[in-house]
Image (tube, rainbow, N blue to C red; front, side, top):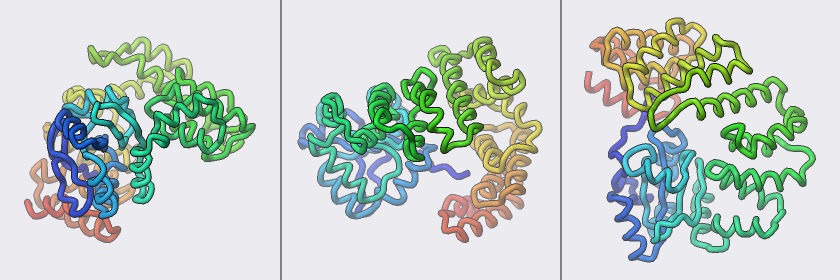
Length: 386
């Protein structure tokens, strides 16, 4: 499972995108100062290193000539990892909760517009034009809503722009939108579900109130599964103290067992603890918990096995644990062979010192990648090093 290398802790320097967007290679404070001096807005690609759509934007959209021509002429551009360095505080300041988020900020450091997700060329340029038009900026759209605007398309668009970073406001928007709709369509349901973070969200009330309309499109068991996941996420947030990096296991166990078995709750708790330990770089805890969880990996999916195998490759150094990860990667390949899991297997073999198998699987990964039109450059570098 290939992951792009992070070229710096915060900013990826001026990237050789040819005629595409040119990003500043400097601090955020310097970017703001430059924007103020040149009387331009700042465009920030707020990304995370693991984010798939972020990588696709880098590959498909940012390098385009028309995109570069517009953004380079009208904005001071910055590309910031929101989970590293200055990006952590900037994510809090600008309430970035989903990736990629595109922020448009003035020379005073004030946000004037935003959007998010993978965006095609034409729309990406239009968002930039909207950011420059005071009448189309998010701040103006919010004022229009407060003025009583009820147009369904307007409300849907505004909800989409705010649902990830301001769920309370988005809840008000969608409440007005749904008041005029006795039934919901597939797009409505997707919009609603994409923004529900917890049972405390105003969107969750809409989810419960509109159950009849939702299950007319989604199977009841899928609705119940979604409801269960929302409840679980809510409990997880309340169970973990980010300041002390500690868990309230008793609270988690008590609350989750109201809608799942003890065994299921225990397994979920181990998984989230392992995930959090990895994020906190507590590798010994992550390693121990993951080995316990995947002692029997026969029912795990190919994708899941590839994911944990790659995480072990990137973070774990214990040879016996890496040999276990080799077994996970082998099972992933057996269930669904592709360029990602064969690449993972090649890297793991190389890390434990088995150059022969590393070469074999690297060659296989490259062939599969080329057959499906995927980038094989990272695996090719591995092969050359063997």
